[in-house]
Image (cartoon, rainbow, N blue to C red; front, side):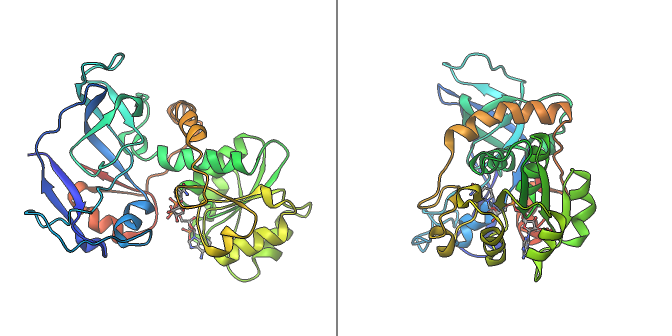
Length: 315
Ligand SMILES: NC(=O)c1ccc[n+]([C@@H]2O[C@H](COP(=O)([O-])OP(=O)(O)OC[C@H]3O[C@@H](n4cnc5c(N)ncnc54)[C@H](OP(=O)(O)O)[C@@H]3O)[C@@H](O)[C@H]2O)c1
């Protein structure tokens, strides 16, 4: 039987369990994909940690899963196994990237055909399965902050999944990039074309030293008070500060808030339009997808306990 990983209730990664599920079938406008790699993103564990919201999870079904619990896994790559009657241009056997999707922590996913992009043959499964969520978010963030040729941009969290995408895309757009990261990640950030600096006390002074002509825009991927404070201190125009994380202080700071929470800009069109270009760039090798750890599907809980670096589940 095909497997799926689901949270059984809110809590730590220990609430994740592997279940059998019936073989799914394609809707008229959709496909079924045999998953070869499912990208792991922080939102996956935030969904069941209760960080966003929590509903009553006391009523369990026969399998022990709270009826209200969402499935997890928002991106993957794999091979098409079934095509809906109304779908054209997709065939069984096609190697595809699937984004957006829900319930990608599984052997098989169903998705609307609009979520399918052809996987470039030169792109590995793990990279293809973890390109989209970070890539589209990075495109949106750079767009929101208006980053382009000649700008000097500060990226907080430049060594993370979204950060490494944002660094590469900003460099490709002709910007000078200063990116914060832990010291152990500096060589990677430098390899991507940015000037790495450590976050922590004294950050504003280190940024000034690295960018004596000033900072035009800032991208906050870290979510710390420090990232917000340093951005507000160094960037004159608050409309050129974009954050993909939320906090009460950010909500009233006059900066751009991106994402799916209250008051945030989901950037639906920008993100959708970015997908094809990201696939092309990753396929040609112009955009690198860094994967740190690959784990079997049934070790999803272990992946979430690791909690940092780019992780991919292999069913
Ligand atoms: N709004 C949206 O649409 C959206 C989309 C995607 C992600 N997100 C959110 O954005 C955040 C980043 O996502 P991600 O996938 O890039 O996560 P990630 O891969 O876990 O990266 C986290 C980044 O934060 C850095 N970091 C850790 N502690 C820090 C500190 N004290 N100060 C400054 N930086 C610190 C890490 O640097 P080191 O590893 O070098 O320490 C790393 O660069 C997450 O909270 C995620 O949920 C939002």
